[in-house]
Image 1 (cartoon, rainbow, N blue to C red):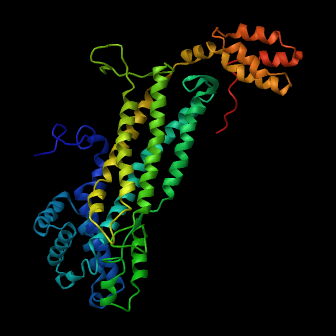
Image 2 (image 1 turned 120 degrees about the vertical axis):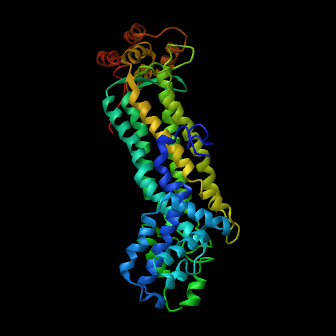
Length: 449
């Protein structure tokens, strides 16, 4: 059956595929096979460069022929590997057998037994996976995260002078600046992106149980630890030196957990944007033909923020599981990680969908300054904090209690009420003038990004 939007089991491969189809080149089964081919070929070339005695006459002019096997690898080739896997019932051995046939085709049969030499499956898998993840992160995921950050920085700058009523515990609180509230998320995101970029992509490469047993048995005079360190470094990864049969996954867990923290920040942002829209602080740009409700013609729903929040939630549920489970393996290895690592692309896809939805939502926002100003005008009570603080400075007796008595008797507090209160205070005239100059529009503190 041909995969379509209508028959896809997962929305990632159906409804949302157009937003994430590029990830197929990093996380699909075909891509996974391709990256394994890549690691096998580069490993063989590295053995030739030592050189191992049986490979010392392998012509370096043939390296490009070998690299073409992964450079020109197609999903059709992946199907060939999958057919071999049906016989072997082993995915990595199928890659090895596929490459041996390619060596035969290239007239390199004399060297075919040095494919996968001394390795176990996880030397290939635990190198291919972080390699693919690093490429996906640099090519697709981080740029989209950075677009979110750039948009937040832009909006923060545009709106930095717009005073706005803050709400703590859902209640009117000291005024703030709209741009500053956006910058809160920008700074949080910027900090976490810095952490994320510092997490290394690590690989395991050490034979059956991490000790190079077979390598040293066959060629005891070679420093295989230095060889492996150099080989993994040549792929842009860092090698975990002391492992069992599997990579320790601690850095991968750190990476996944860091993505989860970023997603959690953006869930918080989505919910705030949703709330501001419901409070009418923002209107949304509309497109002709769009429908907000199947029955209520007036509706313009904040669907982009809701879509983003939902996808971030799914991504985080998977990221938590992956980060908790991957570093745990029974004794020297069990197979649970093989099943689990195949799903790394799923939370990445949901995250990517969410980032794109969030940007769409942010691009639709129109500030409703009339409503924002109305709420400030309607809540003169929020400058009570400033009044009582200045009175404390002046040594006025029990200023907090006096403002509490004034403001918590369930009557409307407006400018006239406060100015009447101020006029009756026994304070110097210059202090009275200072208090009268406080308004919900200028009592916004300081914001210096």
